[in-house]
Every structure is written in C-alpha cells, then in structure tokens.
Image (cartoon, rainbow, N blue to C red; front, side, top):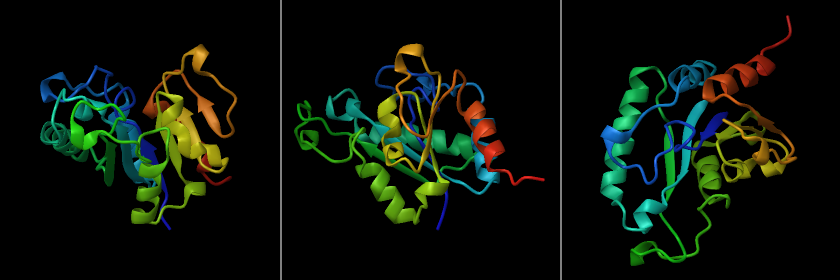
Length: 186
C-alpha cells in the first residue's frame, strides 16, 4: 500500500483568488515547493483534491481549468514535487451550466474524491495526511485515523476534531511537523 498527502489547491498550494483559472493570476504560497518536495522525498504520493465550482458556475471551462492544472503540475515537477493525481469537482446543485448541475458525492466535504484516489492508488489512510485551509478539506480525517493539518488557521476555525493540527503556517510547516513525528527514534 502507498502513503499519500491529500492536498486542497486554492488557499493551500496557491494564493486564494476567487475562481482562479488564468496562469497569469496563479501564485504559489510561500514554502509550498519546499514542503511538497520533502513529502516526495519521504515517499509520499501527492494527490490534489479540489472543489472547482467556477466550472459549474460558468466562470471558466474545464479546458481552461485543465490548462492551469497542467501548467501548475509542470512547475511543481521542476522542483521535485511532481503531482501523482488530481481529483476535482465541478458540480453544484444549482450550477448555471446544466451538465454540472447535480448533487454529487465528490464535492468536499463529501468523500467521493478521496475514496476514488484511495482505490486508484492503493492508499493506506493510516499512513497518510490531508492538508487544507478549510475544515471541509479535511473530511477524510473524520475517520480518526488520517492526520490532518489546517493551514493558515484562524482562531474561529479551530474546532475540536480528532487528528487535526491547526497551524499558522502552510505546507512547509505541515511537512516539518508531520515528517518529524514519523522519523524513527534514534
């Protein structure tokens, strides 16, 4: 079985900008490249799990989303942080674009995207971690087995959930804290 890092995208990997789809507007958050590279070097798969309601709202197309996704993955790969899988949900019950108008099981906080990745990549959730900037990004951690990190946590977000760590920093801090706990005792 494999171990993985499940990552939200907007507000976790990149600066949060409403309905981001243009490469010119994309900006990595500080420490993302270093943190993801550390996880890769430690043998973790990197899996992005992201809600993309802008597609269903008609703000941008799947083609535009995938162009940005490809560019972002190319940039990460250059830094030794290649993404292994990406799952995205364009659905909304009241989506403007009819083909995306539905209740689905993939939109976070539902677990459909996580479950698909776990099956496809044979992931051991007890050895895995979820990182996001919103509690809905950590739905997988409700099992009490998977560790979660809520990054850039604000005081009002701090709920009492098992296995959730609230940190003021981002992915680099999460990588440092999580991987230090995983290192064998000397």
